[in-house]
Amino acid sequence: MRNTVLYFLVVIGFFFSCTPSNYEPTKVKADDLHSLMQKVTDVTVHDIFSPPVASRVYVYPSIATYEILADQDSSFRTLAGQLNGLAPIPTPESKEVNFKMAALYANYLTSKKLIFSEEKMEEWLADWKAELVNRGLTDDEWEASVNYATKVHQHIMTWADEDNYNETRTMSRHPLSDKPHHWEPTPPAYMAAIEPHWNKIRTFVLDSANQFIPKPPYEYSLEQDSPFYQEMMEVYEVVKGVDKEKKEIASFWDCNPYVMNITGHVMFATKKITPGGHWMGIAKIASVLDEADLMKSSYAYTKTSIALADGFIACWDEKYRSNLIRPETIINRKIDDDWTPTLQTPPFPEYTSGHSVISTAAANALTDVYGDNFSFLDSTEVKYGLPTREFKSFMEASQEAAISRLYGGIHYRRAIEEGVWQGQKVGEWIRENLEFRNNKVIAEN
Image (cartoon, rainbow, N blue to C red; front, side, top):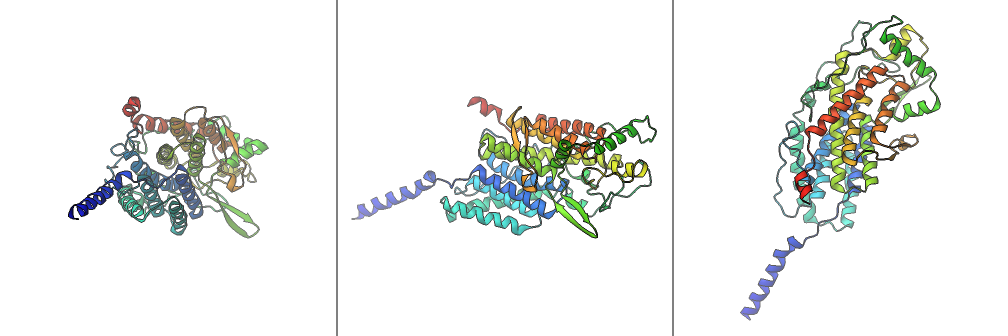
């Protein structure tokens, strides 16, 4: 009898000792990450984040996801020690952690911390957890994964809190100048210039905000043979003669998160996606077309978000250095007071073109992930009432985004061309100085 009891105890002990190794984690899909990133975009639109701030909302959650996944995938490298100030994430204490689940939960927590409408993120979480339960989620798996995700989230937020963002919230407004070539608020809302201190935000891969300073804008002159006057008149004539196709291109890439509409005595705002949100949408489209798994999709989002974040910092550094007047202001003052641009002029200085910078940087990042000549149908703007547009490559899309600013009447050509140069430099620097793939492991396999 005693031997029989011992036998059963041994069998039971063996069974429980083997359970963890036989444990099948609940499946977490790339589609789960896509739905989460779409929710983040929806919330940034709802909360009306400016383009630079929205780029910050994307980048930290993306890195949180990537770091957990890369830590479990030998073909990818951690970004700790590569990104400015980022230390290695904590190690898990439980063997019950579902790392894919933890990666998305860390993203959720970090996104929720960076936005205002927390209840909208909580709605996503409730739907996602219900789906995980349908896939076989257990309480122990959920608890272990959430606990680990929370530690990683706290680690990422400690790093984020050191990027000078909080300090810039209390800095002075951009002072207006009486110099004729300097920026002034534009109609219809005449808003103050946004984020004049964004160049003080810690960069991610760039050495500094002013690492890639473009050529200065043309010297202000109203002499008819001067380069400045000629490019001002180019904007004036392009808008007067803009055809249907160019107007559609301008609208497609408008990406103004806060368009003011005036009807009689009534003024109301239309909320729209930011430029960064548009490119994160393209990252999703490319990942779905490629049938990329969760790891590769995270790679695409993370590299794109870093390119956007550093691109905005570099661009905004130049904007408030040159502090150049917008076409609408000078054309109304000197040429035609009835002239209006195709698009509403955004509230910050003209030079360089932000969309030109960040689109070029993001296109470089996505080309690194998915290759050249990656054809795709861009449906990002459909939910905002615009049709799809088809592109043969990410670079083709970025080139159209850049020239759209001329069609929109909000940028001079030099700001576009130098913006493309600046974005290209940012993209190249990230490619050359940030290693995502572990080439040694890839070669061995």
